[in-house]
Image 1 (cartoon, rainbow, N blue to C red):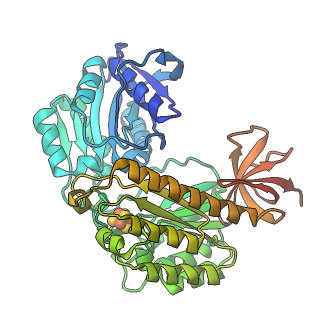
Image 2: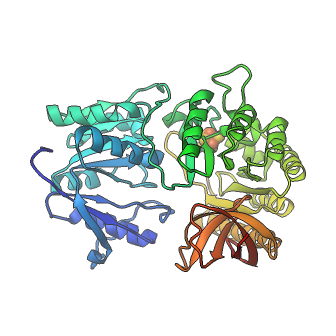
Length: 487
Ligand code: SF4
């Protein structure tokens, strides 16, 4: 099939939840053969799918057309990883492929899949976290015969072969490992930036927070070998990268599964010694954040003073129900240690509101913690049940409107403290890594301070890729304005 046609690829760029659903709906109804449609949702959706079948005039969203002949539905958080492997697919077997990313759509929608397959002459596959679940795989195999291939997250390195087999045999090819495989080294990385790179140091997670699907879908924690990480970072540095972010579901537990006595603190020291200019790490679980780590962050100039430290709730009762394994007091002790020891640090957090059983009083405890910590920023969410997690089974009688009102109240408070924190930076000269032209004003540039504040920078010179001095002139809740200072 793939030899015989060059289908079209339509790239759609939604800017809101409504547009996303409208485009999704439009994509299903297309009859141009063959076509694959890519609709990155990029966070524009915050609740479950609602397709509006009456939406019209959608051609205005069409921004690019090119040849494609494989469409892969990337479920869960596979999307970014999948994009890297797509390149491999193109290079190895000459297929033009695309990812369709119905992120935040819970479950697999049989109508969507069927219509995509019926209306488009494409090879259709499903991959990612949710495809890793046994019940999902069984359902696909028994009901959705028109899906050409399925694979999970643990055998990414074999993705190309899975697809190739589907093409050769013309049969549904399912390859999902029920246990996690080894870390796949050598998968080509697709870098979004030429100056700042994500470096995976660990996959999976052992924490089993009761609301989270990650340990079930991505498996238990597997750390990459320190030598491979250092080689990757040395290479990035030699290619001109200025910044690396060490990435894992729970980076502070790095090495526990692999070494007797080598932790994230040790890894940070080794990465710092490569002399790459900026080092960051996400995401931290407060449980594994050691004093040694705090010492390393404060000691090495190229380990950036920024910590993302999710608290999730300020109520010990809710933290226990979430399975977070720390108390509010323990979190605050850690928080204060970081604030005291790391000069100029900024600390952000994650907070879930409306967890099953959260009372007004539990929520007020969360507000108390926000008032105490005065976070530099926070990612806030309304609890969203995930199939297969213990939290899904907890009784939840808080009305949706009440949850939304709590979120609103929380955001007001969070934004107030973000602004306060940003205002303290006005008139200061800071170092910024300039990453791109400003999204809002093409005459300005966008850069990040050492403590991860976003700055829109005025400059007559092209500064992209450089670390430059900037004087901060104005503060908003989510960004700063500044002027480049020529040295
Ligand atoms: Fe999920 Fe993070 Fe908890 Fe691991 S630590 S189970 S990734 S929420």
